[in-house]
Length: 394
Image (cartoon, rainbow, N blue to C red; front, side, top):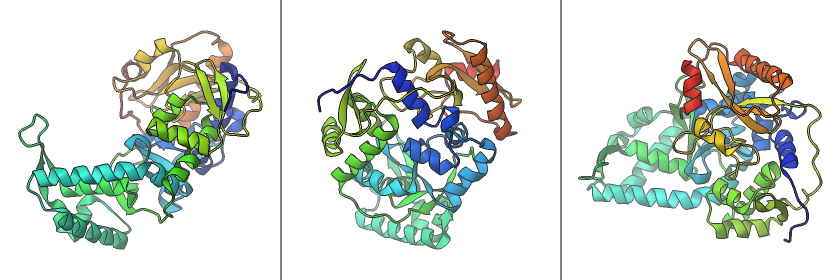
């Protein structure tokens, strides 16, 4: 896989604009189109999913209605654990690939950890837990969707508690339902259903996961990597290892299996899918975007200097590396935005290079566009960042 050509920053930004559905000409018609283009939407903060979709729809007016339909009626999108043990929203057709490529290894560790912690606390054994699990899944299938508390009405043993880390500084009282449902989620047996509140709520019901075939892990890894490179390539090996959470040996095997081709980037060697070496031109028109915290584009690569200047990071990221709401202009992050208590969408430019009247007008248009469909809903990112907090209270 010798390097065949150089892909510079300008072309990488062009690819990002078009494939991430951010340029005006590339905007999508449905949430399904957005998710398919991006492969995965970060689901840790529920509002992120809707905000990420709304930023990419040609007509964002039905963002809440259509995203809710896709998630909870048609089930064409599924919220489940994926890469790096993180909750994402995936196209339903990709769930088998995600489960086999990423979920199985994590699930084995999670179940073993639960059994170890229960044993250390003198709680019931694996056979008991299996009985409770089967009973809870049967109850969930009957109900369709349910909270942990509702499931415990059908299977009271879910209320059992055990002490975790006895005698340690992190000692705590764990409930079987909380730990078990998390394990079942990683194992691909249950998924998150409708929220208990509005579309910004982080409290969810649970539902039985859609049926999917069991795939070979190595083949699934090659498929997932190929899908992601088609959406986000070129990317470095470090980007791929970070995004997937896999071992470097798994990344390299998947690159070879999917026939990825190497190209030269400013950071060194990058990879694209086999037939993706043609030059990609910039969008027809300049573009602006207001993306939410944890947006899959902003968080898509580990090496981000080609679209996000290092000096902007202290204001735009929290202490754990979670990005806050960002303002984009023509393929690079130039600032951030927030919603104030009165609902106003406010923004600030941090990198003003090449940002003139046209850019400011386009950003203001995006702010009005966002405000128009968010309406009276108030959005507070789950992970607060310095600039977002300044703007929200300023």
